[in-house]
Length: 602
Image (cartoon, rainbow, N blue to C red; front, side):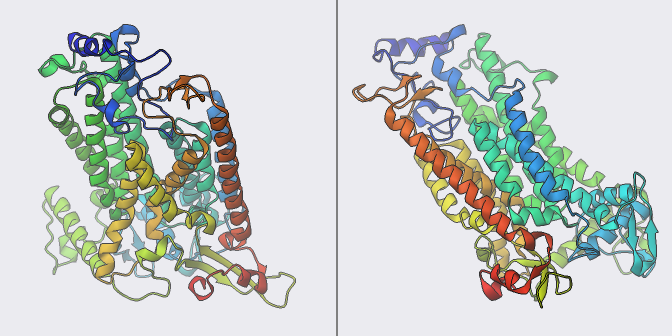
């Protein structure tokens, strides 16, 4: 690798004293990968590695090897055991008593019935009128709800429907809530693994999963047949696939450099080998997963530009680390076609979820002869696509004109403050040992956790700027995509609800965990290698590997106690509010005591 060796040779004359290391640290608290450490980012493109850098095995400078490092791909049994414990906690909380309360609550009135129509007719069906239903959300979330109804049975006394399950017959409420509980549990699993990969820490990954598992907002959505938990899952899965894609591409460049690639050579000669084995499979999977997200709710589209931007920034970062002369140009030339292909897969996936509507004749707006006043067509193939587009136009018109007042509507600036939660269920019936009782399911985030989000975002922005950390930037961008568009709609007076925050929730939790990691671990000086710790007194500011000062150990101890105490307090807060997350019958006085913001929560 002539280019790497020439640039490295320039700096051998300026060797640092023994015991010092180049700029890097993989932990959450230090200037780290990709866009994290500016000097390390430019070490090869602006003149070579920092002082003290030395080539690793294979002739690659150690700083470059560290810059391209990722989480080990091998199976880590202990991390999966810890993950299993967190997922088991989430599953128990979501499945125990899933059939309570009886009947359809809140918007289950629509989605549980639409889901059964998809299972029974292939399209959403109005059993009262004997015709197709006009619905304004894509079908995938309802298909998933319908799978539970197909497996465990469905009953609707109002329309005289009672169907046994194909696997076993349970209470019908279990059937239409089953898919939400499964997907809610799986989203906890995803967050644990994504957090571990981003923070290079099983403990922080498990903390993220546990906080999500103990969030009342997530719990209620996981126990109710609404669409938002499916949207949350697919947006999070898309992000996870992109993080895996980032790591896979960095490993690809590392292998190529070890094999002797000179990134300074023009054209294909300066790029890693191609071939189907080196395709960005995780990026293509992200396209499919994002198509699924859009097939649950169109609001997933707000995340599209952010996800595309992250891919570009990460690809530019890996090329800079490898020493490519023109990282932006090469990124656009190499990666835009793959992004386009991922977009094609996204569209095909989305259209595929409408297969019941496309392949049958019963759907709303499906046949022109039934809707003479609509601009529809019965031309084979193209007529069906034209009619689907017209259906989308009609649904879009509904969404943009939605301004009817609602008792539980709220504004985006209220959401993270829990200014107006949504009551899914309330009853004064039941026995509680008191003259007056109350039972409620309130879509309320665990207060201590949610009231931490805004301070955590502020700290995340500060730490991200100070350390140039790609993780902080990624989390902030995705949170912005999930929240900021709703502020625009608020200007038009659109009717909105707090559950619109659902897809941003896992990333808000990641923001909190990032700050906890910063509290726990003392930041190494810019440039510390993996395993480096703060210098001992008298080491002239050098970073030493494997040694840890008393001050650093104390910092870890105190930080660990603070982080552990925070998670414990969140768990206690969750336990206190748990009865109003699951509809447990309480004495009225105890229920009222949990209404901390009085009328705003009632």
